[in-house]
Image 1 (cartoon, rainbow, N blue to C red):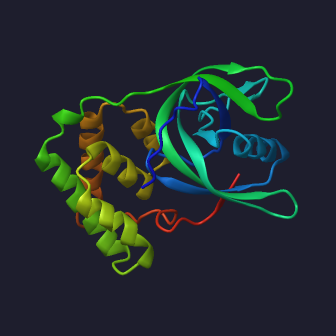
Image 2: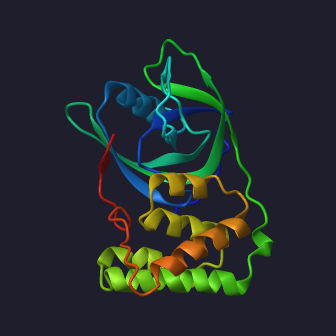
Length: 230
């Protein structure tokens, strides 16, 4: 999966609120950009650092002068591929880089889209993840992959990563992106910077999903991703 540094990040981020779409670090999500404010956001990003933060409106939809109230935790990502259509719309691939916490929104009358002062979140407690928990997490997710679409050509990349990576932070994020869960649960997992806690929380979910007579399917927006709209 793409790995990027954030040397260009200066504590201010463009915000792309997208209800129901949670992006995790290391994952790649497709986006179709058509609203004028987000066309401007995309154009500005492409002209500079290519960075955009994908973030959720809160479930209670509290209004603010700039739009619905947003969750405090999102994921900053970089545009790794784009196509500008003749009418000004864009198709993008956005690669998640790091969890980010919104400190305060900025009032910038010259921008149609929203911006915020924000801080990057560091992950911790990675060394506490036991080999047994990690292997069970990977194994149960592999079982779900095999049951869902054992020969799906788009699974090649994620299967390769499962076989070659021993990074519990990255693997737990990729699994969280791939499986179908309510947005509220995915948002909760995104907020977990304690990697050991995240792995064990996700492991409990995977155990339920792989228990006989409990059927869950993988999200269709895995590998290769299909385009979603804003």
